[in-house]
Length: 124
Image (tube, rainbow, N blue to C red; front, side, top):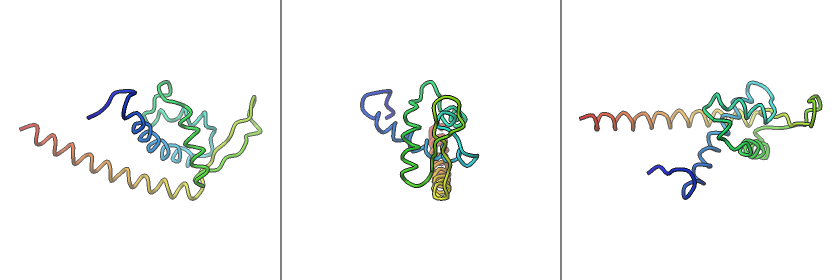
């Protein structure tokens, strides 16, 4: 049964968000290098609400992906104000993105089959 905010199950929701966040970030980085802040803004394209989303999750995901060898970062010396990290995808990140996309397609097909079966059986 779906759970509301907080309480039990909150950790699972955060895990689901991180599992979807990583391929979104990798995909955005296939378009070119970017700062964490601009990636945070661009997540709206994938349904993330910037005002209800914890920005620290983006930075944790980027740090994890860098430790995993999927992305690299460097300090941007051209920015006005404080220096910011610029992230870019690495070949290993492109490989993992392709695997994630394939898994998301299979998951979508499974969900579609469940919904279709449910709708057929409950409409009678």
